Length: 463
Image 1 (tube, rainbow, N blue to C red):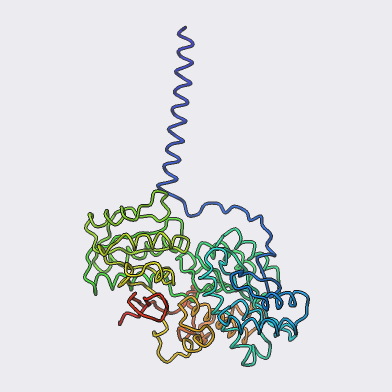
Image 2 (image 1 turned 180 degrees about the vertical axis):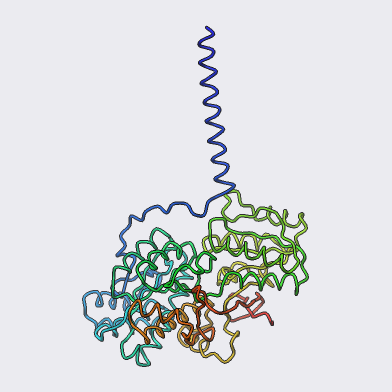
């Protein structure tokens, strides 16, 4: 072989080697350092199939013949049949919030109603979607049965966003263009809410999220509000409990690198633990890591000297949080953010989740004189959780604001006023200039009980 050919082959081999090394480094960096703010792929489905004022069923789990007949009549403009059939459906399944909303929408249809939207993850997390809808439905029904909003009844359009940012953007764009929509309750996850927030802000359309608490939403704009307390409030109560009350000196954290709220909570918790004089384990525990190993994460935390583990759970990775709980076997004191305040935590965690402490915005026993918990039991047949309470508060805030001014711009100004106040499940609803709620988180603990039907309940931790 000539020297010229050998040189050519060596150069080609060098180029290929460099290319492989670069590709390998790029792939490694994507796995080890995943980016939250990746471009959102466009949504290509049929948006109209995800939105309903009463003309289609979105929650297939709760279908029955009366509900189907009521929705069909609604779509055909036969309001009287719709009201009758939807009322019959509620007699069969009273705790179906979708039917409650459609029933009230039908009754409001011919009376120049005021219209708002609520966006929930029906195809992403059905339990959470229904929890949010219950709060909106209860507030709507109470308002419409007590004179409405200055004599005008409230209609609620439901959207199913699956917690998918690309779908959220399309829903937000549609609602901004629909001048009849005066406000929006939503969205659920912070990633979803962050996708819609710029569109609502630019369109002068009030959005109140009952559940999104990522730090990036604070001060986002004059039309963006939240009824959930700040993420720093959750972190502070967990840090104080762990370091001061429970005398733990070192904590490990498991978080989701792909979820804004999870990362915000982790950052705030690290600062809060440091402020309390505690230490944070440096183990890597990422719910979004493809090689996530629950047992391995627990073992690493224990070997690093951690005495407690805080789960900065995300809605999309609740199952992995539950895997960690089951793998713990009592080795570490378990704590978590409010995302794990779900029926699935009680149902699937069982004894392994017993004594776990969570930050929470609200609990039925937190405000003894508040009528909301008792009224909610009458509507839904049992205790509701904080997502229902804060969705109720978001809707109550919108109702109170619309009583002052039923235009988009007027509503935004009303909610932003330092004089604004409304009564809700958490007591007074007031917003800071940042759009955050002026409220604090509490602590709850999982313990044996009969209220949830799982054998375990969430109980408030005495302050």
